[in-house]
Structure formats: C-alpha cells, structure tokens
Length: 254
Image (cartoon, rainbow, N blue to C red; front, side, top):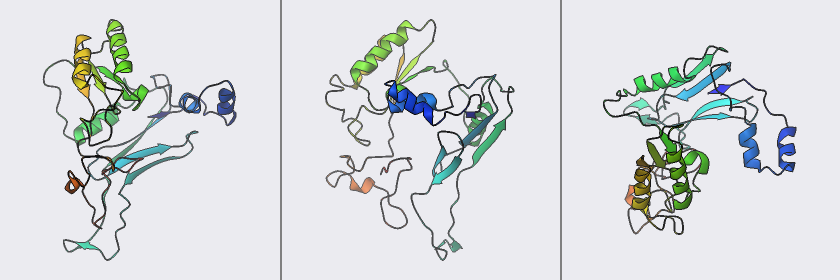
C-alpha cells in the first residue's frame, strides 16, 4: 500500500544522512516514503496479487515512487509461436492482480481491507473456527536472516515484558537458522548450538506459541537435499528440460 502523505526524499537527503554516520541501508529504509500509513493519510494506491498459483507475482517501485510496476516471474520461459499443447497454441496466464485507488482521508479501519477480503474470497479462505486470534512477532522484519539463539531469546524476553502494552501470543523464527534452503534441520554452526527445541521451549516459557518458517518446496542450488548423493530427482524441470525456478523473486531456487 503506497501513500502520498509525505514528500518523496530528495537526491540530497541520503548524502546528508550518510555524512552523519547513518548506514546506507538505514538511510534508504527511513527515506522511503512508505512510513506513514494511517486513517488521516492519503491518497493511496493498493497493489497486490490475489494468488501465487501461476507465477510468483512481484510489485516494484523506485525510491521516489515515480515508477511502479507489477510483473509475474515466468522463469524466463519463451513460448515459440508455433508451440502447441494439447492441440492448442501455447499461452501463459498470470494470476489475477488488484490495483485500487483510495481517496485521501477516507480510509477504512485498514487501508488494505478490500485487498485482504479479495484475497480471502479468491482463495476460499475459511473463517477462524476456534481459538484466539494469533498476534505475534516474526524475526524477519528486523533481522532478516541475521538471527541467532542469542538475539532471539533477547526479543522473547522483551516481548513477554511488554505484553500488557503489546499483547503477543506467538513468536515466529524466520529465515536464517539453517545452512541452506532445503536443509531445514541443518542449523548454522555457532548460531544455534542449543537446537530448535530449546528455542521453542524458550518461546513457550515466555507465554507465546512457537512458530517456525520454512519453504518445503524450494531449495538452494548448493543444498545437500538436491545434491547428486541425495535427491537430485527432487529438482523440477521446465518445458525445456532446465531446472525450474521455484518462483522466489530476487534469487534462483530449485
């Protein structure tokens, strides 16, 4: 969801901040004009894909929000005009995409509420049947893959202490605990010496439900899982016989 409630950063701002000793990545994060999303902002543009059944849908934007694009990754496949499948000319289709303009100062409770409802209806999502709504913390959005049992435990303790102000009942360990995608039980040495059982116990002892991220249908090229000594047959190949990209944007995964 992109909002125009503040001016885009100028060319000079990153250089000024860098001279003040702020790292470039931090500069880009703070300067990117997506920060203030609330009911008094706007106007806004909501862009999103309703599913990921055909390809991995991507939304891109430049730093100044002058160029926006939506595209579907087709694994670099080019279909010849004469190619035929089941007696019909080959063609590719993408998943449905949504683009919604929201006028200023007219947001619902959540600016993306109509998009979320559209995704739920398109995928026949079932309403929550029992139990409490999960409200929690995920390691990815601060640490990315730079996690360890030490910084995770520090956050679990802080989340427990903040529970009266920020109710949290789940904590998810995201990407970064394993050596490679596909080798999910092969933990990074020096980072998770106590094992994931210990991490899960620590989450539970702080009053939260343990969660673990993984991508079971994708693997790194250098993973043990897809090596010649284990399961090379797990690698799916495209119509041209080459290994197919699992659909992740930014990096090739089996």
